[in-house]
Image (cartoon, rainbow, N blue to C red):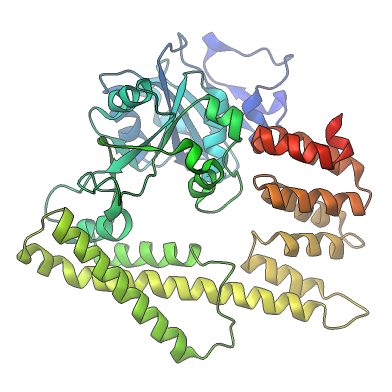
Length: 440
């Protein structure tokens, strides 16, 4: 996926890019226009931090400020997508940071990858645009990296004050990332990596809606296990009202619905409700245990937070049930689309993919069904199927076989070229032995 030099608008006059040169490597993760402001002079920091923005949310200013104020100065790369003019928003940091402002909306994995390619420091960390780096965030990471760790996780700081919604949100979302958690129980996210990890294992999934970091961690396995350093603390902008807490957790639940074991839409409603209530009760109990046993909340504080934990857990589990029902509906529509042997119902396929847009077989079915009537739609579905396949070895192999069976040599060549940087080098070598095209 490459942009073209003509789509890049360079804002800093002192750092004009020669548009006669090929686009920089980070262009491969997106299409369309981009504004780009370079730092001057180029940073010589030991750690790069990729700040991920969406529609230039106001929190970007606080995120960047928290990094600029670190004792250990970092190379800062802001990757904003979806519009909003991040360069204007961050004007006070002009010359100090690199800003890549992309017009099209991107998934978090794509923004991560752009920042990796656009930075130079030997270690790479990431910070969401609605978070801040607490004091010592960068230096504590570097000390652990210097001791030999290729990956270092970060804790999420417990919100200060007594806002019960913010505390409930922390317990339900980040309880096991609290600094007080025992290392054996800590969830190791917010990870920084030694740069050679990406050369060895590939990049983040650039099209996954959620969990691009979990997928990357699974690919690394125990070979690159993140060190737990409680001193590396990130501050998260939690919900501060009951309504925003409920809405946030419900939407997170919808997005988190598992594709593999979702309930069919014909499942009886009271069975689903019973599962929701049981799941919510388990989540509430776990959050209470974290608050009591690890964070030391007293009985009065637990009593104040308790009702919000119950409501928030229920909202998340209702969202999970809703998301599961959507996936079940998508499977049902796909089956209905092929009910008549002589004709494929394209509308039902399109309706199905709108409910389950990361389903690779469904994308390929849409591509084939649309080919006779709309080559543009067919190309869009095929491109998404290839994008979804190239970060997992088994899915990549299946995609190559699909393209080979249909003699789509140009698409196969394009797909194979992308595998060179999306998958671990060892996996690429293994697949090269199976695919004649990969040997060239």
